Image (cartoon, rainbow, N blue to C red; front, side, top):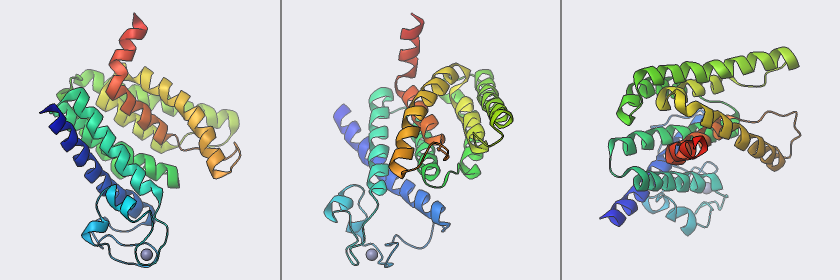
Length: 252
Ligand SMILES: [Zn+2]
């Protein structure tokens, strides 16, 4: 039964990932999410059902459009895989429960935000602000009291607001986007103030290493902007999976 649930959760995850891909790539291109149907961005070839199967189609097509042979971005595959693994790990940790569904949904928001931010350095308000309202309502369902939830949101957003202002005064340029502040509000609202030290600390460490890698891959120097959203989302997802265990070990 457990194995069966794990397999189902993985399949659900990769199918959701396929939908996240639509959201990510159409947001970046400024297209509508509902129409038109999935197509090759170069030749417009409309994908048939078997070219639309998460993970499998990418492997079958060897990463190229069937008609014009244009390379399909590996990001499609990566998003589906991350989403599948996320759903699977949540199922292993939380089983078929309310927290599973809540974290699955927010994981989707984190994945979409991360891949948009990596590409165009934007964390869309549609996701951060709407997500914050949903997070405040969902927090009690995952065992976070309203008081912890609201204080987490204010603490997280407040910290980042102060960092942003300080950086601007010291260096006289933008160091932290306003989108990051809104994202911190969401994360605090969802997981409460007790999660903030872990998320900020791990996010900063991973962000420092990941940021250097990011600039290396893009062939840019350290004067160029680094998206911070993906690293905050990563540390949040890590917290959801093992954060409480790590924190209790640390305090011992
Ligand atoms: Zn094509």
